[in-house]
Amino acid sequence: GEDVEQSLFLSVREGDSSVINCTYTDSSSTYLYWYKQEPGAGLQLLTYIFSNMDMKQDQRLTVLLNKKDKHLSLRIADTQTGDSAIYFCAEALSGGYNKLIFGAGTRLAVHP
Amino acid sequence: NAGVTQTPKFQVLKTGQSMTLQCAQDMNHNSMYWYRQDPGMGLRLIYYSASEGTTDKGEVPNGYNVSRLNKREFSLRLESAAPSQTSVYFCASGTSGGQETQYFGPGTRLLVL
Image 1 (cartoon, rainbow over the protein chains, first blue to last red):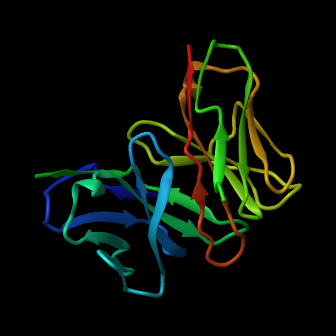
Image 2 (cartoon, rainbow over the protein chains, first blue to last red; image 1 turned 180 degrees about the vertical axis):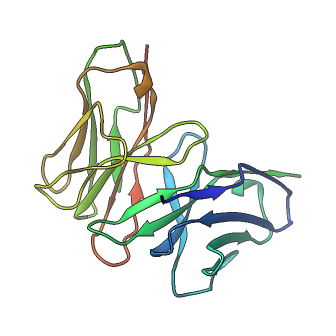
């Protein structure tokens, strides 16, 4: 069945780069998303990548997609304390509606 | 432009009580969704509405009903709350067709005793 897996926790020093990884199982994914959730808040879309792309850059964010290995990563350059949050990977499956399958989320802790 | 709004923010229920969670969006989106988020798990889809007048079950629909009141509003009802429904509930909306981005509300935290 469809499944999205992420490591649960990542700790980085302020100013370093963070890399959050995600694997998914369904090869029919059309789009893959990264969402950010701050404490007590809803999910905020960070970025997305279409399945026929292998890289997308958006300011401090770089998304890499390895479709062969079904592996997605999010790199945050110059990580700041404001980046501390839970990051969710999600895959969109084709079908009658935009079905999103979410990973369990990676908690990013940024320390001085 | 408020985006997606949800009420209430917090609610405590006793087992067997009923309640309705409200959601509204002002982005003229066709599709709307209800998810639940439990500790250590990703979001799971409860129900969705691809357009006004239609609703369909998602991954975990048991114990819930929904109403797509109009294009803006999509409500989630718990007829007889159970402790297993203690969760954070998120409403989302999105355009339908092609690449769709879902926009989320701030969530409703529900505790069932």
